[in-house]
Length: 122
Image (tube, rainbow, N blue to C red; front, side, top):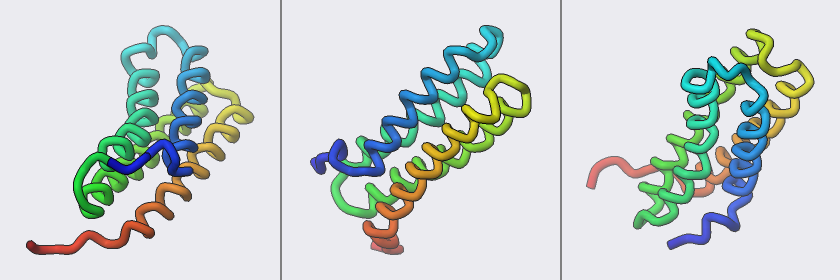
């Protein structure tokens, strides 16, 4: 098993999760099972998929889980934009969260590139 906690992509993703939990605790309570839950799920998906992928055998599996994490970051990007446009998050907070999301995304993309392209076929 690879030590995923040492990866900067995982570290930044974990920090992003903590920031998302803090921010969403201030959103309207009627969004508890809607936008709050979805934003938290998308954020948590990133470091979780890196942790799970690190336990799989081979780079191909890690790459697949890292790709899923990258998709979750994209989903989170939209959810944060929606929250901003609905007035749940201030433009300043949105900007800070988006910077964290972008930093995690760049590191995750770098990890994916370092792993290399999955091979097709057996």
